[in-house]
Amino acid sequence: MSTAKRCPCGLGEPFAECCAPLHSGERRASTAEQLMRSRFSAFAVGDAAYLLESWHPSTRPDEVELDPQQRWLHLEILQRTGGGPFDSAGTVRFRAHYRLPGEKGALTENSRFVKEGGAWFYVDGDHE
Image: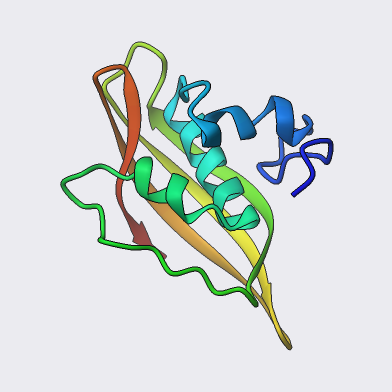
């Protein structure tokens, strides 16, 4: 993805100034929501390495296989609890819209996050 294009996370900033620095390790997410948005962007741009790095080691799979035909289109943040800069845990409920050949859909999940050593990690989530 061109770093000049708008970031897929939905905040309206250029990718280079929004989620790309998190993907490269130049910067860390300061909130659980920011990590959630950056993970959505990683799905959108096909960055499986970042998805694994931002996944808590206690629940991290050995690999992430992304479907090259699936296009992640839009992210809605529906609710947040905790997950702020001074919290150690939080949840983010979101709806992620996608397209596959001949099909459109949405994934709704309540994701759990923890902050350890100054870094936020995705732990797991419940799909609706």
